[in-house]
Image (cartoon, one colour):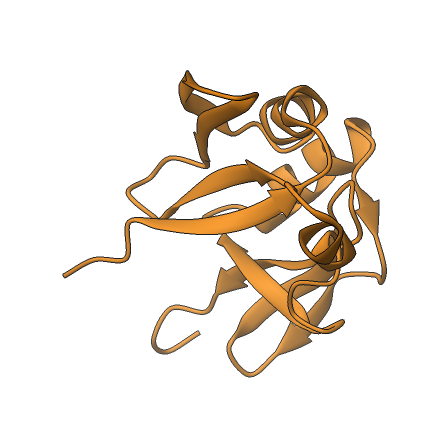
Length: 130
């Protein structure tokens, strides 16, 4: 069974949609009203990976989790087939990288923050033999 969606707690639906579709180039797959101010909002980077369910914080406890869902660790990973192209595009669209790109045993990587402070890896995995 593939992992279909992961919930990301956000402050506001529209600002989250704007960031993920604008800065990161994700696709908006669904934006349906659910009543009582709730919406079913799903974005995806495409390419068959898991999508994000953007869930607006509904109470103070959930609001505290915005930007800290993984306790300060990198919690999300975007794999690219062209690191330099996507890194440059993200920079041009205002994505905040926390470090310069670096080479690791598994490939080229750089950590960035989303609009809420959640940490992400942009990573290009090395092919066998590289």
